[in-house]
Amino acid sequence: MSKTGRQKKVRKPAKAGTPRVRFNRCHFQWYFRGTTNVLYVWVVVDGKESLRKSTFISVADKSDFNRKTYQIAGDPENTERLKLFTDTVLRVFREREILCLSMDPTVILYIALGLRGHHDHIPTIVEGLNIYLTHKSEMSGQGLSVRSISRYQTYVDTLATFVEITYGKDTHFRDLKPALQHDLLGYLKGKKNYAHNYALKQFQFFRSVLEYAVSYEWTNRNVLRHVRLVKYRKPVLTLSMDDLKKLREATFAEPNATLVRDIFLLSAYTGMAYSDMAEVTRAHIVVVNGVECLIKERHKTGVQAFIPIFPEARTIMEKYASHPQCLLNNLIVPVLSNVRMNLWLKVIGNTVGIQQTLTTHLGRRTFTMYAEELGFNLGEMAVILGHSNQTQTEQAYYQRRQEPVIRKFKTIFGSNSDQRQAG
Image 1 (tube, rainbow, N blue to C red):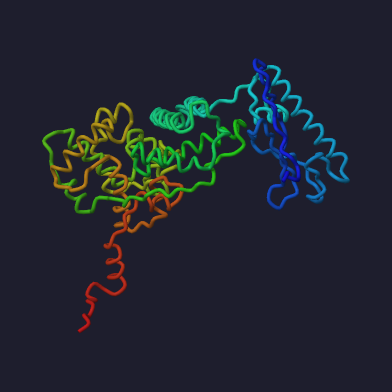
Image 2 (cartoon, helix red, strand yellow; image 1 turned 180 degrees about the vertical axis):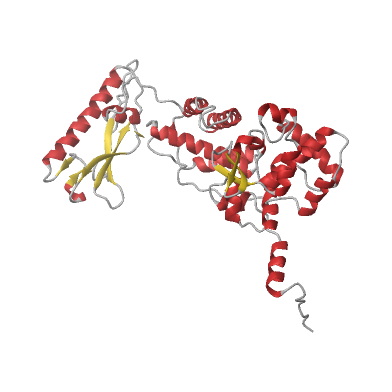
């Protein structure tokens, strides 16, 4: 019995020796984003899709648009605009085909929209990373330190290797998908074995590069823009008042050890970072309402630090007032290099019996403990430390302790208010 219905057409084989010609095909896909009536389009060339772009044409009813004829019922003006757009895309498509140029649908769409020319170069991700680094390098000394640029170079090297291994060195920004988040973190924390917070820094750097790419229209979206990762918070460590007393009362045979000890204590009594301590001069000392204060914009952020000079700090400053280096450069203390300071601090800590490893930055964090002992609150500490808000002070510098709670309790109920034990 013969089959009924439509018979399948059998394609005849091409004659031997006859080359088969394959022509490129270009067509359009249309859609409405969400509940809006704004028409969006993307170009498809041989099955490869371009990025989505808005036509900025709004229709009264979605059913008014005919996806086959590209006409909008009752709107001849916008219908003509769509015809002009599609004709322009097809013209660009044929031009690039004749010139044997890339048939990338996004490139065709961008040329049709006037966003680029036939021979404009859109950088790959690896090229874009280096362009972004060059842009940042031009800001060296104008808000970015040489050390920061060096750190960015490390990030670029790592990210470029990741892109080449995961996607290929010729991958463009527009080819990235939201799965980048998982690929990148898997590479940084898995293959590179970076700690979470360090991986997070590189992740955030790549997100900035993607924003840069969007601004230059290398792509129309940042696939990492809305990704939120939580930074692991390490417990804040500070010295105790007993530790400061040990340091203050210790004596050293080596003059450099004494100098480094005094500079560390000055940091603990003022909250100044090493970079600010190396720059602060007598000119930064001003009298505000009868109180001598150090007022200085921080080296790192430019935020002003307002530091009343506490008695312990004044003693150290007066000790070095006649030091040749201070007299020559009008400094308040002579400062060694940060590396030498930290080396000496390790020796000093072991000598006086402090369990924590002493560093120059530990002195700045210890200031919050010292200020709390004097009765200053977090908001006031933030002003002294040069922080833009007290949340930064609390998260990175403040160690919660039991002693202030006990003192507050005794202030309210008296020092002899022993608690009765339940019997």
